[in-house]
Amino acid sequence: MNIILLGPPGAGKGTQAQRLQADLGMVQLSTGDMLRAAVASGSELGKQAKGLMDAGQLVPDALIVGLIKDRIAQPDCAKGFILDGFPRTEAQAVALDKMLAEGGLKLDRVVEMEVDEKALTERVVGRFTCAKCGTGYHDSFKRPKVDGVCDVCGSKDFTRRKDDNAETMKTRMTAYRAQTEPLLPYYRARGVLKTVDGMAAMDEVYRQIRAVLAGA
Ligand code: AP5
Image (cartoon, rainbow, N blue to C red):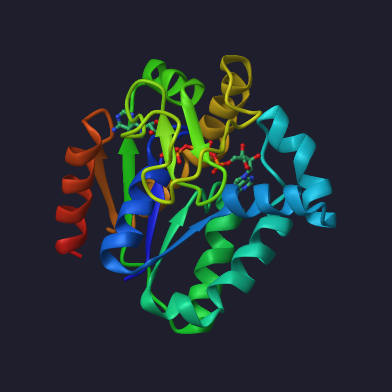
């Protein structure tokens, strides 16, 4: 099964994608994570993306589409994939349609995660991530079981994103409303869009997503 998790910054796309990957074996394809890896490696792509990401603006479509096209062609994606943070513009959605058609692949579901804007800022400002395995946490909503130690890999090294602050969130939300939200009618018109309550507790959001996928 191939799906998209669609929602504003901090909606919980990464949190739910990690869980779906662990339980269903589908591959999480996070363009944000791919770009952050490119920035960390100092690659040409990373150099082009860094300033835009730090400012909360979108990276040009051509760079992102190339990244996803190469990734979807890799053998592990044959198990199915979860697009997390892609597509984010209509041009990206059209490019995805083309990639899927060329690969003989189908888009089974687009899951919209609906969350109040006030909650989004609180979520991103409190977010931190295990620097070793990438597991996501939150200061209030998801603390590690043992303070300062990752539940999954035991690492004591955590990171916070530079764009996770209230000021940059305003730019990220503007980009979401202007460029990504129009994808909702795009997918609704095809009958693949389903909406879940992203304000619910993480386990309940997960339950709703699984129910939506079971009906695909
Ligand atoms: P990206 O990394 O994709 O960021 P984003 O879309 O802004 O989404 P986030 O990662 O902030 O949020 P999320 O929905 O995954 O939430 P999470 O699960 O972590 O993109 C970063 C940048 O890269 C972009 O600004 C852009 O510059 C560039 N980029 C990436 N893709 C691009 C593309 N396709 N085109 C162009 N540019 C692109 O949850 C957030 C927090 O809330 C966590 O701490 C979590 O523990 C907590 N939480 C989650 N669910 C719940 C819940 N139900 N209740 C309470 N807390 C919760």
